[in-house]
Image (cartoon, rainbow over all chains, first blue to last red; front, side, top):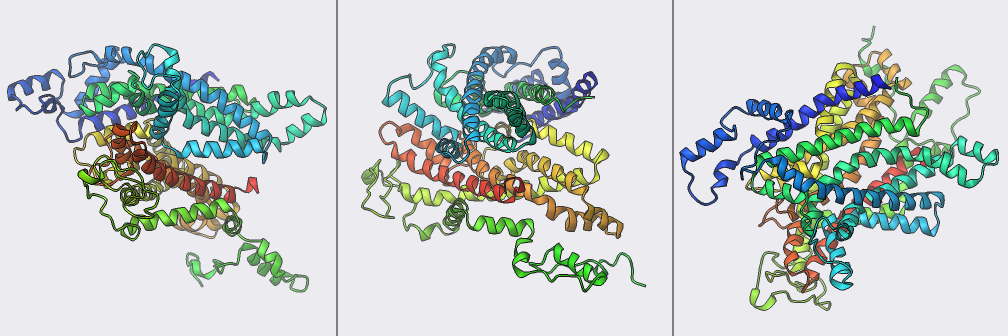
Length: 308
Length: 332
């Protein structure tokens, strides 16, 4: 187990550097000069531009910029945004909001998605199964931004249950609607994945054995069926937490949640290189750690998997 | 003495519609001609290949037929939009047509779905918007399948160091969420066309296919017929193309079909956020985005492009679902 974790962590290192380098190249080596863009419509003063370039290390070749950035990163310094605010400070403001939103969406998709998946998987071909299949298909097909507007119109404008946009991002009750919208697509995937997995495992020999030796149905389902059926679902959920935070860009925009998605969207539009690189780097780290945890969870769920 | 590398000499070229069982039968005839029972035509029908089975299965599925009809309709719409409407989708009449409500009596006419906030026919814009979505969906999927299929095949077939390098590169790209990466990549371009969106999505999206292909090749590589091909002296290229690829391609096709709908949704999301396609390109995503301003007073401006987009995505996902069910022997 220990050596497996070590090997996985060692494998993560090149992936981490590769992903951050890729993001770095995408942000800094593509056309469009962020420093000139800072001046907007005004003509830029060459001396000022040169000074700013030096301050942000942009006068160096791209590989030197990257090494410089990484060197600072390992000391906990994410650099300074072009507005002069440290990127770590910007992220410290916005990340808690997005984490709250993403966790709420995650719990929602986990509880509702699993329940629907189990119900329809156990009763294939029933009315419940058909309803779940059709509903999830509809949710998968409707893009998230359309879904957000439907939810906003129905629950805020027509029914008046919630405010159309979030006034206070620390108030959990205001985050419920955005969280449901954010989690809905993944919920549909979780439900379908669980349904398929349960359907396959229902025909497995160990289920027949468990039934034959007279175990109560509840025990068969929770101890035997669920535990074995959850493996593909856990894989999906693990990679999904990072995706939820990245996907929050649309939901946060429509519901005016002042989280990482909103900050990132503005930063991309204003060519705020340091902020974009900082946020995406953190998201990549979240993704890498989550996929490591998923691999370790396999061994917990499936005793047949042993890491040597 | 025939050259051992001359494949035409011994390679059984199965005639179309005739599968390997017949070949085994012919082999048997040489050994024990008397006892061989001629394959019954009805039984021969049963012994089709994976694709034959899948096709027979698909033809009877209503979901498959509905999605194919929808997709054909959308493709025709994308190629010949003028066949569906003679209204110019860019013509705007702010004086007479500003936010005019849908007119249900005007079948297939300019006012059928109403007019948007710039006095343009929503029906004509929905028809012309199909081109951008379908082009992006099909081109990204084609590029991704080519790129991912090739890298996955190389990684799975050669293994070892090649696999290690390709798999790490795949991991690197896989770690960057598609929408996020595309936003950053496209944010750098001030002028964006359908092709810049296609390239951005293809560059970031190939990893899924590469992983699926690698897994499939790893399984197929162990098969006896690959060993046999190798033993008979078939070269690397021939083993890959004739023996491994046809047997490893099924999961790739399933994933690619479902992903196609996803790429269309991502394009619309990017355009919606203002970082995808730009005017004067007509795109459902752009139209949905500009409909935000009037959603309270004129929800139909958003409804029609949103419905068109959702139906398109739905059609491709249903097609992928049906193909997967048909190709998955576990479910048969």
